[in-house]
Length: 411
Image 1 (cartoon, rainbow, N blue to C red):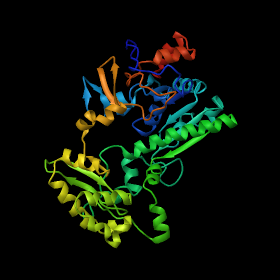
Image 2: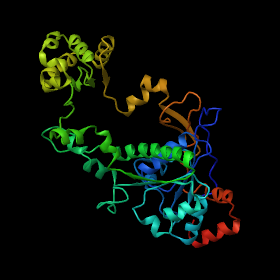
Image 3: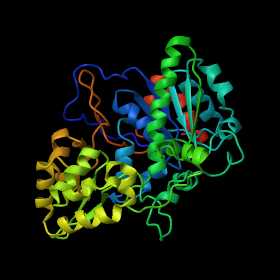
């Protein structure tokens, strides 16, 4: 347990008005990404989030990806706006302390395998008895019931099972998995929404409830009408690479200076502007050009026309011409470009905060802007157990009780 950590640094600009979730207390018992991300999003808008980690096995995200001076950078993002404490929930003292904390909380987020909390005597009956107004968000790979419920579940498996990987990649190449936590991130966003929905219900009923969030479900929702298409037409969406089965031109194209741009023409008017811009207005008069599906079936013709025009111009020239023509284009940017992009700079999408351990840090800002009660990054991820004594003291534990928990190995 660390006790000599500086107080969290304030973000450069925190709104004078209380944040919208001020007064909400969240216990984050989850590890890795979906559950912790949901708690982060709540903390960004003022909720008091207490990250509860095992004394000897902290959240693995602390060790994921690159580190600086031995400090995991991913954790600085995922752990922001959270106080950190240690607690072994499987120890008798840990169980008792967690129930006391639950009595003060509005929300608990957890992602243990189904049955784990019950094994520790911390299932819904015990938690709701400690606090009938509690909302318990349970985030798992496959949900609390069903034949897969007790399998270990990760985002990669959800990306495979949901149909995402099956439609991603080139037609004659293997299915492609995303190089980041896509299913976890979607589930994290959805869990935050589910928590707010359950809290709205609590405002009417006065009672909390359980949220059953399975990673395999939100990603299926964002894939669109595939189940409907299959149910009604027997249609199975194939892999189409960067092309769309619903409209064209829609692809990536290489510029004369070796860069890449993405073009989208979902709207009929935009598709027509693109063809006029690239000097092929006669294609607009083709019968198939009048619908997105028709254009998609003739994507090869449109790609050749657009690609040849773009290949003769630099990225700057292409973007400038498309902008003047009110056609939709964007350069393919890596993180270096993102950090310097003028639109992101104008929105302060990547903002700077001061961190007691690493100094100035640039990271993604809060997810959206509110005009009257905006969120803010108050501090980046804290060291393991940095706030244990403070949280327990606020809970009413004496020095002797904290020492007993430490002697038991519960802290």
